[in-house]
Length: 278
Ligand code: C2E
Ligand code: CA
Ligand code: CA
Ligand code: CA
Image (cartoon, rainbow, N blue to C red; front, side, top):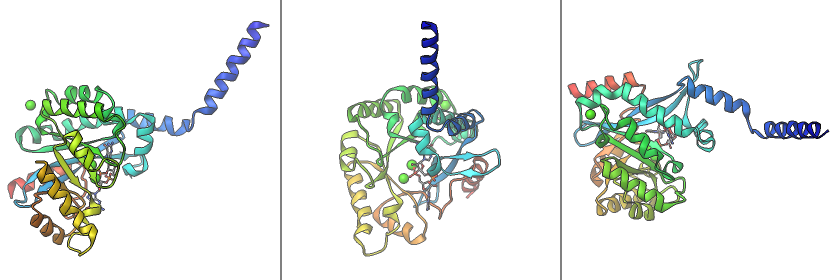
């Protein structure tokens, strides 16, 4: 009888556990997509707007379904992050950048490559080991790597994040604050965390040239970044007028559709090659 009851209890527990798995279909599909390397890097060029020279790129993840359909991060990143799969996905993404861009970066040591991280990456040292393992002795040098941390998500443990950032910097890796002015940290993050680069969000680039208060936020971010001795990259640049205004503000690095959308590796390499030839 005891065996019977124990069996029934076990069966019940398993049934409850299974029914609690929120979306086991999504989960299975996601895991197999990761294993099949369906999550791939696209590369958006970052351009020096004074000289037109390529400065590097930002790596933006895409889900290439077996059907050929391309899915944007807006549709899967929340799941990737909450499920914890993002850690493995980010590792694979970084490994793929070596296959794609290793040759170019090895022969062009000035080029930078930006990888997007999420707040969860700054909770422990695993990400330091990942970056060290992947780029530590590779054609892409640690000095070429920039890690972007978004201000949209709160960094719950500021002290842990600060230590991780400092360790990256001692390795030669730079840290950029993404989406400045749109989220949680704001000025406190810049000052407390000792970031190297500020990225001006499209939200503040869009109104450049208009006589609105939002248009003046870019000015304020630039001034603050300069006072803190930080580099600046403007994103979401779509018009020539915006380039002129950014130049006037003293911003030298920008990315946006006016130059190029995020590109598959071959197209990015072709663009890098064309720019080099002038
Ligand atoms: P983000 O890091 O702020 O990236 C900039 C987004 O703006 C990208 O969208 C890019 O394609 C888009 N963009 C660039 N230039 C222009 C422009 O001139 N006009 C317009 N309208 N859009 C432009 P995307 O690729 O859909 O990525 C969305 C967000 O997903 C990213 O925002 C980033 O937060 C997240 N993400 C992308 N890849 C990764 C990743 O590998 N890891 C993590 N944790 N997050 C990622
Ligand atoms: Ca970014
Ligand atoms: Ca090397
Ligand atoms: Ca951004």
